[in-house]
Amino acid sequence: QKEVEQDPGPLSVPEGAIVSLNCTYSNSAFQYFMWYRQYSRKGPELLMYTYSSGNKEDGRFTAQVDKSSKYISLFIRDSQPSDSATYLCAIRDDKIIFGKGTRLHILP
Amino acid sequence: DAGVIQSPRHEVTEMGQEVTLRCKPISGHDYLFWYRQTMMRGLELLIYFNNNVPIDDSGMPEDRFSAKMPNASFSTLKIQPSEPRDSAVYFCASSLTVYEETQYFGPGTRLLVL
Image 1 (cartoon, each protein chain N blue to C red):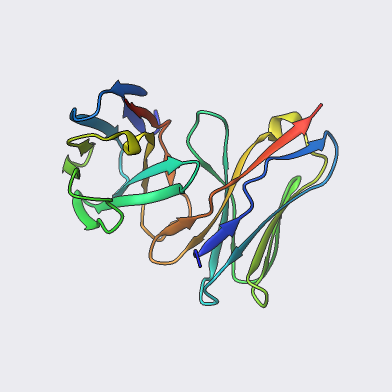
Image 2: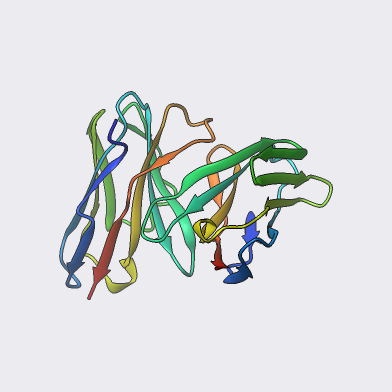
């Protein structure tokens, strides 16, 4: 089992919809969880990170960690076409381990 | 700061040729990472350096790959000889510490080996 699993998509939703992106991870000892956003032909950039369980909100973005089920989520409210990108979840062990990424398309 | 700089941005070469990818990290960052990204395998860490010293090269796929960091502002990733399965986007990233969640990625080098 890979350490971080993520559905590759693509996921297409209409503008204004709420988007839910998810990952599962294998090791219950992981404590740091991140979401990176990668626009086409660009390098990934950190979007949000959380420590341990719970929620973290930043504008239209909410990151959620459920350690009991080893599940991490990113919610995007009022989605915009500019949110179209690949979203990579990641965990930090002794190094950062990335999921394969979910391609998201927001349809105007 | 200009961010992480990588060159070339695109490279097309023939199987068997030597390929050298270059990276200039953000000034003051002590850690430098080389990643490879493909559709099949996602973003994979190949090797990382701390203060110019290689710390973990367990992700380097085979002896055809080598990486160096002769000084704090320059690193190379070399593939010799190259093979078609090496075709991928290679990213360089840097960070202040290895325990920092923010790694700053360069724009990547898109490599195609024919």
